[in-house]
Image 1 (cartoon, rainbow, N blue to C red):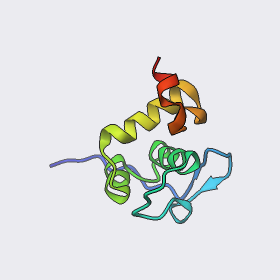
Image 2 (image 1 turned 30 degrees about the vertical axis):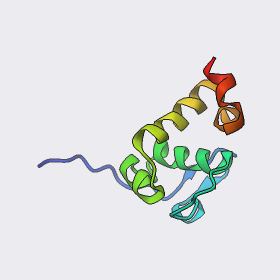
Image 3 (image 1 turned 45 degrees about the vertical axis):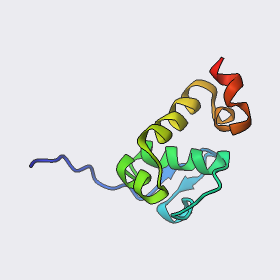
Length: 91
């Protein structure tokens, strides 16, 4: 089993432009997902701070849920993560 391992980064640039480390991420078991927390997790995975599998395990997310956050950011920016606007953005 050969798996390419990427070197772990120490920090990534968060959604607000500041450095984001593992210690700055939402705590494991977070249940209340506000826009900022979702965006921090997406930035951490995109930047290599966490793998997708680690993020899903740490936060008890499905892959589909995480990918929907990522797609919402790509299509609509941070406002796309607002749960009250999901229906508006789906149209």
